[in-house]
Length: 343
Image (cartoon, rainbow, N blue to C red; front, side, top):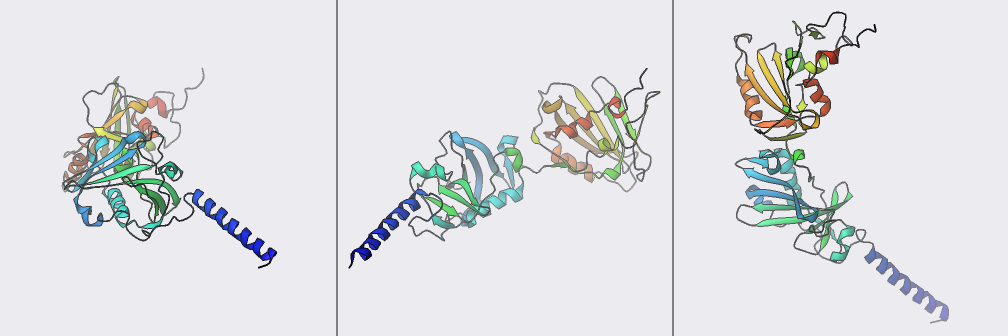
């Protein structure tokens, strides 16, 4: 072998060594030797899905973020006092974890886990999320989900194993308890609303109304002499509040609320009456709801089924809603009027 050929071989060997070292250091970009590719991330989970009784979502410092518990056929959220969880969201998480397969193995060195977001969740600076699934018979499955690789892939590590992997799923694991509950509180079409009366803590009342469902704008009772509305439909936003009303937070009804109380009564043309009680102000305000059928104004064919359904969902709970909607429930007549004419 001549000197030139020998030099080329030496150069090639050095290049191979360099590439190997770089490949090992670029955690999360290249496979590490292993034969688990294609296998289930959590073998046995699929056979136990119907027996999962509890799900725990844990963050940095081993702080529990969300606790989900199966009560009969319903999932509930511990942090909201047992409010019903969104069944589809829970099912999607369980199915994603049960179907997840390993694309390739990554690092098994704990010192490198943070590069993938799968470091030990006990670390106060951990960026991943640990999901633990508890089976009724006492078994459990725990996995740390780390950084997203693509929209459909995420790094993961079994909590009891140092081997990290890339999986072919990216489960949606919300870290905020309110993201696990159905957002809808009530949904009453705006064309059904006939009258709204808002009574402030000091006794002041605001009444808006219309006599016909086809009337576009609500009128305002007892506008002071010399004053006028900001514009013709200024009261419509308040009247439309119960259409697709969604929560920001929820908790069991409490007896220790403090602050002013505002009562907002919504009357429908078909006899349904929904009363919203607002206690507190601004971001500290909580709302309760009550529905009934006014038999004196309801058509003879009407029944209380809708009111019963609403009460069955909301009677034991109080809610927070976005501030821009809350302001509609506490409006005074002055809020609807143009500034008084200058002297």
